[in-house]
Image (tube, rainbow, N blue to C red):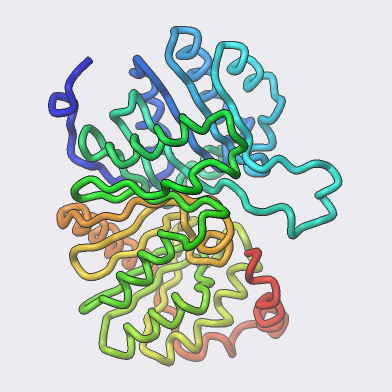
Length: 363
């Protein structure tokens, strides 16, 4: 097996879901020791079956395969033939927070969900980002980083801890050790029951210390009070605050509720942009020239307060500049939301946006 130095490659940041799939698939094909995937959605469709078939092949060849999947997000493959075949080949598979039938009528107990999107191959190649595995997501705008060697160590250490607790209920794993730091990168996992969310806390701390810019790309913008206050305070002291979100996301009510807050943000000098080409699924926060966060965490209540999430905190100047370049390209593909936009919307949309605030905690 190659040493970490021999196998090291600089971090690579992907911006399209299909490219992320291709890269993970290629690395899984080359796996010799282990494949670990922690994922919200693997669908029983072409891309999902393609990955499950490859994982079955690798498991039969003696590669250790472990999957931690969300019961709701990946429900279509639960007890499916491809997954049963993979398990028969020797893979270890767990579904996070299974829902008994009686809970269907208890929405409050549907959560938390495992919203993580991480892959680790041979303990030496790590992917951290926002991409799920479902055919209709192929052309989405996502952000995922590929790390190798020493850069992947924070992910490997955190996954190794989960391995020790693999036999426990997923809700119990990771309550004590949730951060791993190595040089330029810090890998944080937010698990329900662990107390303060290190991802949420880290984002707020970075924004409070911002001197020049705070740039955010998110599918929906529903910031809890503390984060909202930190962003407004940054704008008040002259920091350039820009937010890119969707023209129309996969959760329409979330779009309307988000928009109901835009007027107050824009009044404080915050610029908000509507991404046009297709679905923006990236979750990126960039502060000044030396700090960024990418991963599975949306800027909403579910991600920041409820669900299991995983983010990479980046203090590598070169990586931050790459992410800023991606953000600038996204700005070119976006339209700035003008003052007075809210009054031009149909009445039913404005009413839905205001009324939807009552359920923002589950959006």
